[in-house]
Length: 145
Image (cartoon, rainbow, N blue to C red; front, side, top):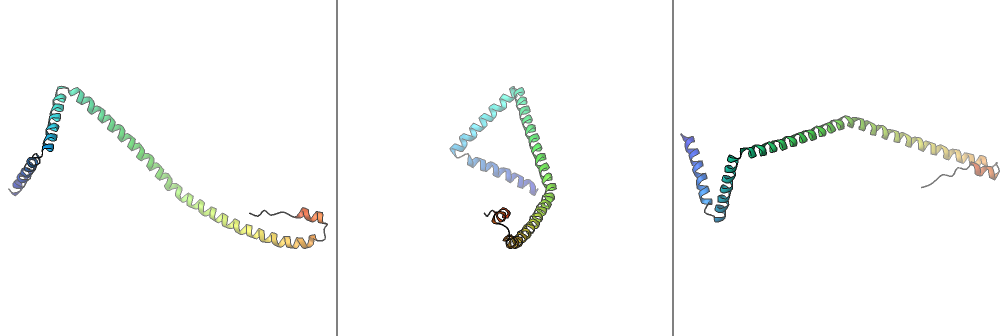
């Protein structure tokens, strides 16, 4: 029997709270307006069930269209995520290979520059025996930036 009292007191408290809130004039006016419009709509739909049926069908179609759009968007995002998951290891490997290639190239270029510096100093001493016209043809200007 204890649970019956609890339910009774909850309902009684709700009714008492509603009665106290009706003491305020603006709340009372809004409530009366809401009840009138709701009653008028109910009577209209009672007399015209076709209109209500049509409106419910339109809302159902709108909701179905929205669900299909969301489903398509979710599938697209899922496919993009799957594609990124498959590409990520390949991209990591590509970056590692590129980094390694640049590191190798850098060491090769440094070696070539060192070799040219050694060769050019040796060739300058050997080119002294050549006429000045020939010496100028052998000189390769290096662009400095």
